Image (cartoon, rainbow, N blue to C red; front, side):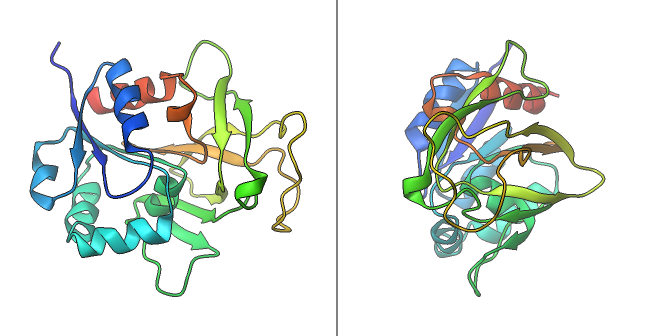
Length: 211
């Protein structure tokens, strides 16, 4: 079977890690920096990073409107961490000028688990990912506060893991928070699976692309 061509938005963030995970998952990854490169893609990954910075770079590189149109037209997209924020229709804690690409009928809270020093690793049970819990790295991670009726919740937090600090943002209990969702061809996770050496989330996305 021909490997699907899946782009990784290469404006900021952990691009190389996503490229490696996609290769392990059976895709042919390519870096994407120009609007003309979107047409050749079967799917796209929006990596973690800083959502406000990626938003500004999308506009500087004239990718914002073409990518938003491609998502609306059905391009499969997976967003991790900042990518989840960029796919969300609504964002709590956004800067006054922050825009999102949209497509996911969710309300996401930025930096919900705390600041950089509050980063932690845990594991989550994820619908559609066989083989046991998925290792998950949470780095200034968002969570989904509300999900619309068309959104499938794939994973929630169980605990913060041994020795992890309490969040410094005053957002309350972290147990049971929504950290992975799917709506049609859009997939998003609060966490970074690409830095854990486990390609199963990317395998799920490759399967979505092949559908």
